[in-house]
Amino acid sequence: MRNTLYGDTIPIETKEKIMDRTYCKIADRYGIVLEVMSLGLNQYWKRKFVRLMSPSAGLKMLDVAGGTGQITRNYLEYQDTVNNDTSSSVHVVDLNEQMLRVGKHRFASTQWARDGRISFAQGSAENLVDIADNSFDIYSISAGMHNIPHMELALSEAYRVLKPGGIFACLEYGHVDTQIVKQINRWHLETLTPALGQLLVGDRTSYERLVRSARTFPHQRDFAKAISHAGFNLPPGKGYELMQCGYMVAFYGTKPE
Ligand SMILES: C[S@@+](CC[C@H](N)C(=O)[O-])C[C@H]1O[C@@H](n2cnc3c(N)ncnc32)[C@H](O)[C@@H]1O
Image 1 (cartoon, rainbow, N blue to C red):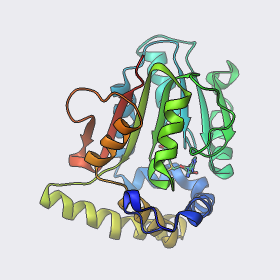
Image 2: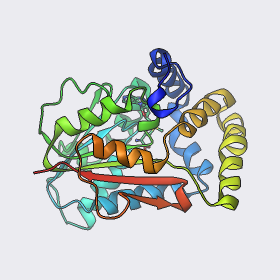
Image 3: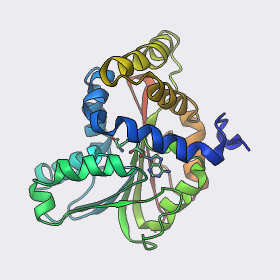
């Protein structure tokens, strides 16, 4: 069976396992490789993604497919510096044990961890079994949705666990429609990224696998519709924000009150 809804060519029965194995291989060097591959833009995208959520003080965020906690860190830094807030918290859920191990280690010596404002759990975005209905103010998923075999299940879980009025936020690799930038984007993803994977971690295949997954993510127009079909209200306009002409796209939605 194929994931026909989103035109994915990967058999959905095996996709979760394949992606999990891939992240096991790259977990230890995930952050540094991403910085190099994004030519230093990774942190800029993630800071902007959090800034556009405009979170107020004291909110509880669920960082799904949170990996090593890059969004978590940006969120807590934002709360500290912009809102002068020390009560907001983040629960990170990720499928991959190795990514979580690296994340826990990175946060272990932070004040956030000492204050009990971060927790980690292993789990799938498609079935957030341990998370109660209407329990979080923000659901965030960054560079995670493209890995998920049944995105519609992840969207419906996001809707379930958010409180009424809660914010859905998703950062993903988008589709570049501007011709010249499209060529650069294709070269970057299909040629440079696997080459850097080989050079920096000695693993070309894992990065080819990740690029293939990212490239099968639906067009931003279609994914915004899927968010809306899941029940979320989209912000005025298109419902998403392009970064670097669509190389990355930030989607936002609100669960109706
Ligand atoms: C590219 S990393 C992104 C990590 C982090 N959100 C960030 O922006 O740096 C993708 C993450 O998705 C996780 N993942 C893949 N499939 C998943 C699933 N079905 N449920 C939860 N997490 C998943 C992987 O283990 C990996 O940590």
